Image (cartoon, rainbow, N blue to C red; front, side):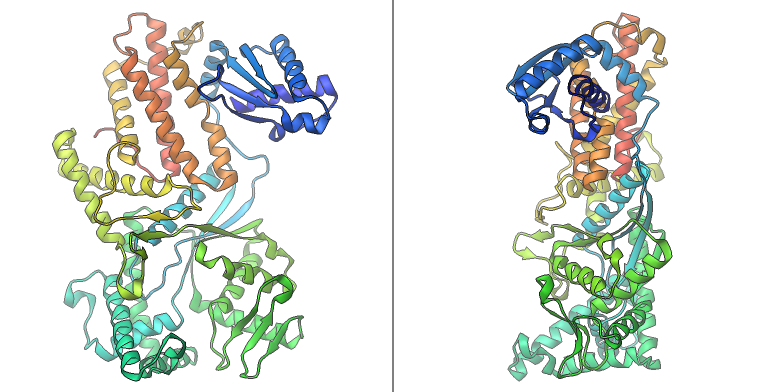
Length: 586
């Protein structure tokens, strides 16, 4: 709908002013409720470009559209705002056309999107789920508009934090396994990571150490020694590392399968740190600008000219840091895929890291570094502050999913129609309703904003929620099933007027393609989540206000069934882009 109107305005400006514009330069918005109209065209930017009065330009364009296009019923001009009410026949024609079209971008891109990237020393928590759901939905949205997307999971399986869990297991594991204690594998490893931190704190108190001198603690010295032995391929250390890593991956995969998260490519940091090391050593050998060894022997880069600081690329003992493997991974990905964009879905606490990564690559002569994009999002925090895995202060992902599954089961059994389903169907429904509550809770928030999650308060299942959307879809499927007739488009096409509530639902439906394109362009799934709530609310108002199956006039009944069908299909389509399953029954 918006596209049709933009094309008409572009044509009007060309005829009236001789200026060739793109449709992206035409700014539209929904008319605010306290003004008359459906769509508002903003003329201030165009008037500035043409150096004319915006109100006069609005009058000229309105007159042209009124005389040459068939979609305006009436209009009102307030300064440089042209508010137009669309003809019912235009809305009807756009609805029928919408049935056979979908949004695609003009120039598809090759986009690599990295998300999840867990550490193999701890289980997944609620913060990881925000990452998963954002990355997954962005990939779905980009693919839906025609981009070629490669989903990548870079698993962090090396470094000092991994060695902490390994050392704790070596010292205090006593041959224990997840099977012998009945724990999910990644939870079991996380237990040892927390145990290391607890023992380290005791040592720091015992030796009178603070955070600045933490490396002097005997336990930390042992962990650093284990890291050096790992990078030197010590057989005993590698045996422990492989054992714990495989357990962690088994646990992660269970959660990925449960939440329908998948990847096209899985990479491991342990595979790339050596390549990164060689690229860094080569830059030093070539005397690339800014690369040097400090007095301790650490390899550094001076980024002060980029407004950053001095950055360690390799420690003095030769061991790698985070950015070491990030350099290797970025170079290898570009060589393999030649992407237009490399998108990293990582929390906002890593904004500085990605600025450094891009600057380091540029200093090495990789001009494509500008294709790196850090998709920064806000953190999920508890009422008392940031979640801390090392202290065990987290909302465990699996425990939360279990809790929501149970709540969905209780609600469905009490007020729903779950009794019509067999036991396996019930369990599937409960799982999907619980996950919809969680996905929507996370995705309806603008990605840039932090989320405060209070474990003492359950994620809501009423109001502006995922289950409300699912219930609306199930209501539509039930309505269409009871109607037992297929709406005839031939009869619908002859309708001349709509009820106001039909217009409201029609306008909501016709926003679909524009919202998808905007969500893809801005990488913002919350636009789709909030659009779904607007659409579901519009349908429920429509359902309450006018009869559908009981409507006696055939053309009207068919049109209302058509609106219901289109709403159901749109809920299902947009829901799938957010990873939210829409059930037939609830």
